[in-house]
Image (cartoon, one colour):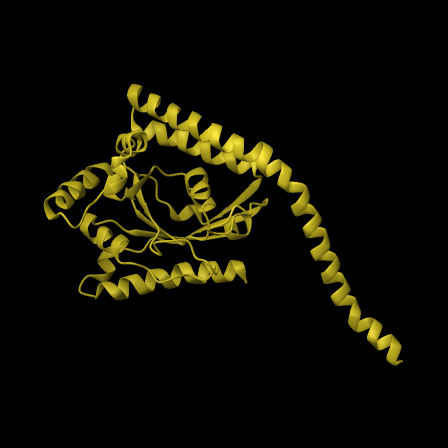
Length: 267
């Protein structure tokens, strides 16, 4: 009896050990592909699609560049990873409505998910220092992204006016309120920039929860591995619902929406 009980107790541990061994073998088999095929293709495709985007902007506009070059750059690199993306809640996006998109940030692969599968024209809020880089700086501004330097009130006001003109007809601004990628997978505190901008531009917040990307590419590493990501698009939050309320209440409520989405999927 005692020997039988010990054997039964060991079965889950043996199964877990076998699972880890198989995962290790698959990881080792993936490494030559990552270094010899994926990374060169990532560099080449990035150069190609950035160049294509600049050409499209020259002959058409930044909307067409984002919809063609941005989307296909993201989908191509997701395909060769490979990463599968599931989208939940697409019905929460109203066609023609612009948003401030507030999303959690677990991995660099979040960018591929947002650009490739959100289905809206996205502009980024870029640090003013990035304009100093010749090619990238040109691409940032030509692509219609928003450069805001709040330390310079006059320039900040002019940037907000440009942003107001850009975010019409469904063009939205994407912001990552945590400010950096989460090291633990847990949702960090939200900075106030996205919410101040939403009030300044009179736009609703579109909360988004992304899960799965941290397992595909953990932050601060090159430990890439194929996987599956999920993007959950929540119902928009109307800025006017917080008229007269402290900004912190607005921030906390949106963060709670994103947190629940992340923890439900990760759980």
